[in-house]
Amino acid sequence: MKNYRRLLAYIKPYLGRLGLAVICIIIASGANLYLPWIIKDMIDKVLAEKDMAMLNVISISIVVVFAIRGFFYFWQSYLVSYIGQRVVVDVREVMFKKFQRMPMAYFDKHQTGETMSYITNDVSAIQAALVDNLIEFFTEAAILVGSIVLMLYIDWKLTLLTLITVPMVGYAMKIFGRKIKRAGTLIQERMADITALLQESISSIRVVKSFVREDYEIKRFRAENLLNFQAVMKNVQLTSLLTPTVEFLAAVAVTLIVWFGGYEVVQGIMSAGSLVAFLTYAVNLANPVKRLSRIYGRMQQAMAAIDRIFSVLDMEETVNDKPDAVIMPKVSGQVSVENVTFSYDEKHNALENVSFEVSPGQMIAFVGPSGAGKSTIANLIPRFYDVNAGAIKIDGYDIRDVTLNSLREQIGIVPQETLLFNTTVLENIRYGRLDATDEEVIAAAKAANADKFICDLPNGYQTLIGERGLNLSGGQRQRMAIARAMLKNPQILILDEATSALDTESEKIVQAALDELMVGRTSFVIAHRLSTIFAADQIFVIDKGRICEHGTHAELLKLGGVYSNLYNIQFGDLGNRQ
Image 1 (cartoon, rainbow, N blue to C red):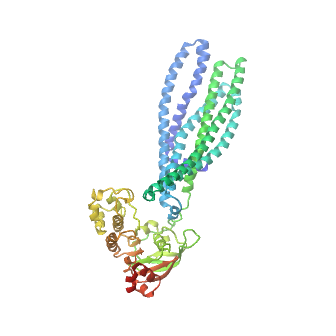
Image 2 (image 1 turned 90 degrees about the vertical axis):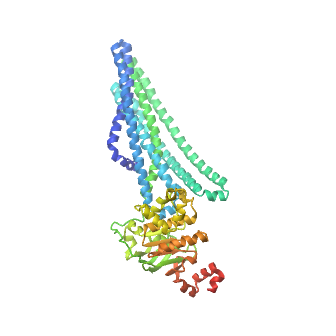
Image 3 (image 1 turned 30 degrees about the vertical axis):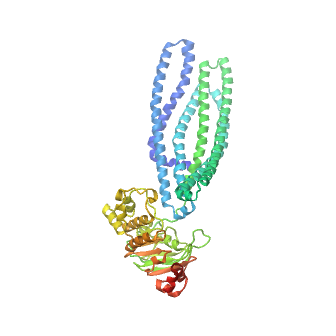
């Protein structure tokens, strides 16, 4: 129950409301405890003694008690639901914050759908545990305790005889509880698998349709859906078996009451009304026990989700600020990579003993075969990952010694595949600097050669561009990404194959915008198309995680090595003539 106690800590801000809710639950539950006492008085006083005054009192009290019960029932439901919903909102926010702070390595190893499942399916399970189960738990617990107290008042010997079944009920709940929790864990895992498959299939719907793989995806979904069904049915089997087991033990208790209580009535030790009231309280006792067993089963299933949530919250944030991290001042753009070694999986190095120096304002290009380590360098500079050995310094600051925010605020990135948000063009560009005015956004768009096509859109800068910006062409999306980077106005710029997916015409327009963007900034360009880096101050050729050549375009051609070979492959006879 350690994690459940941790969950209850989220209720702390709402303890005042919880206290009122518990009072309302106790008062509302008290109305249920009044009914057996009415039956007792009806039999022993009204029917046996023909007491009309008592009949009038009973009639009025029934109306009054149930009016009070209705009032407090409303407030118990409202207050507990409010607390439960607030806790769900708080936990969901904490989960979202956690995922925002998680290192890129986490997202490399976990599917997007799986991550989404934590915030949707698992947190929803908490809602059930805290709202429905909490109301039912306190209600049934109040009835249970109240029934035992009144049963002791009526006949303590008969009460003790009744309670001998309680240890057996507790043992049965313990055995079933463990199995139900395991089944609940499996259900949450299966739901995460379904969510992951949904996200993957829907986000890749163009690929699915282009390869005519609709039936294949349906089969995959059907298989995952069936596994989830089997997990749910296993849980249903256990919970369905728990309830009749508890009911049988309760029936044993009622049988003891009927026999021993009937014996006492025959002997004149107990009145008939007292026996009927006692028997009613015993049923009241059995019902809460039965319902509490159901609550326990549901709580165990919810515990599986709670455990999953806290397993994420307990994950180490490997890339974070040191306790003594300083804020990096505005930099000039000098970058020093010193003997850097890095591995994604701790099995083989993506970079090995890489070193180079970059002066402020220089344009640096990385070329080489796929998987050589070019993008890895681009990922290490903004500290998306931490180096395994060596250091990266900007203006003399080791990037591990400064705050992440102050580091990344000074770095702009234009990736190969631009991801835009499902909002307006204006807000997508403003993402580069949230406090920018509309005029500043438009100026950045003009500098990125994006203003003309934006103005041609149905609503100009207020046009909603659709999920991931798929309503725009690749070149248009790239120009918006460049405008976003211009608005941010970073001193260090990383262009990760920013034009490789574009056609020739779009590439020329985008390249002109990139040339404008790079003016006065330290720029790192990862390129497959060598035509985009002829003007680079330094070109580093990366192969198998090492720098094998470096120099200017002309120097590397004269060297006749890897770069020259790449150039000849791309430009053929023209390259040979040059």
